[in-house]
Length: 377
Image 1 (cartoon, rainbow, N blue to C red):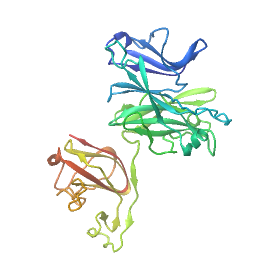
Image 2: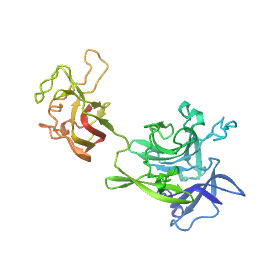
Image 3: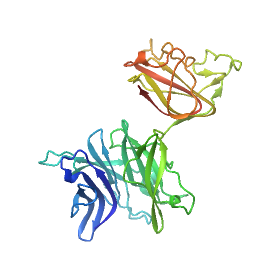
Image 4: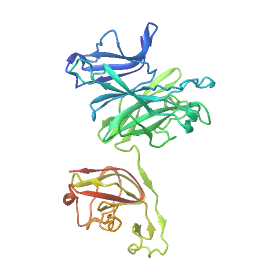
């Protein structure tokens, strides 16, 4: 028997110490059906024999993680497509999409989610017109992982036609781990190396493990193939910097004030004669007294933050008023490049008085990128 892809996991939830380590992978042999096989171990060195078939089908793809939010394992395999065959296509011949499997309780066992039983939840994301329904591009595999209050995934998109047929890794997101959407479609999340280099190949695959947090960074492991050899590599990403919102230096106002004077009061989001880009959040609850932003400011750039009352649908009182002391003019301008820059206001050093209240944040930014924000002690 040989494994196409294989992942090893340490399972702290299993009461049996002999199954502390679990190995799962797509496998096949001349005398066994194709599917996903499970092996277990007490030390990660000596494994059970023979491998146990736990999922039939699924093909030669594999992506898996432990979901701490729902206390189950999440497996990405080849999805089941009713019209899978492309008999008239001499490039693909068949469609490949990602299917979502979730671990379920064993019958007659008190042990939950032991990788012994799986339930198919359907296709994670289907091919569409931009893929020419599988004739231009297809979904080979995806590595999912839980990140904060959502799920992220690294999708391997295989290109068969058109200019530049190099495969790419795209960032995906999901709120429930089942239905997935593109974050920045057609954009390669993992940058490529030079032609002829191990990471310049079209076969650059995210490893079957989630990113590893190391201090202020995330380490993403991958494999690359430069025929006939395979290589193991690593990409580094600063925490929470999967996607950011970037702004330029704004637009000039009509009837702008003289540079150096205060902003024109007719323009809500003005600063020194320019209408500045801004981001407004949904209603959120202040959970801790310090607001921190993950921020990257270019030379000559700046970020300011104001805090507003929540908006509502009542026309006579729509809400959104600035909370006294937390306006843009009160905010101490922020610069720099760090993942946890603290926000303060001239007369309000923190949000202590607002803890437990619902608010709306407005970020005004110039030549800057906001990656994320958080409340801290």
